[in-house]
Length: 118
Image 1 (cartoon, helix red, strand yellow):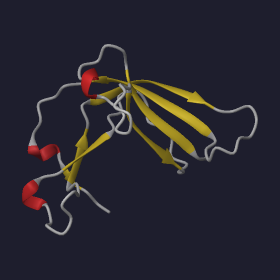
Image 2 (tube, one colour):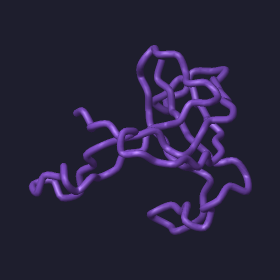
Image 3 (cartoon, helix red, strand yellow):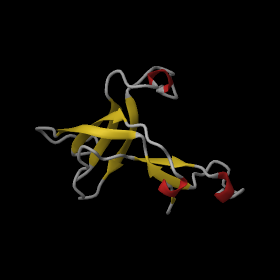
């Protein structure tokens, strides 16, 4: 099943002033979005989507913008909404999934990071 997955911030979450669309500069609650064509079950409340980061000591000069590690983000899913069209549509997906999340501030340790695997 092809799913369009959208992570959105709940109302009144910190950092709202920085969450803007790159092409227009308008404010948004959208944190991330992607497509998923796997048959894996959807994440449940408590899931923390990955955050990709760059650790300079592991960076390779030929890839100046590449991320080197990932870790669970500070956003934690509080509830999940799914929408399935009643009639077939040609939008490239069979389901829209919206994960509503709250910021979950944590003390970070370098041991929480994992190497990015491509």
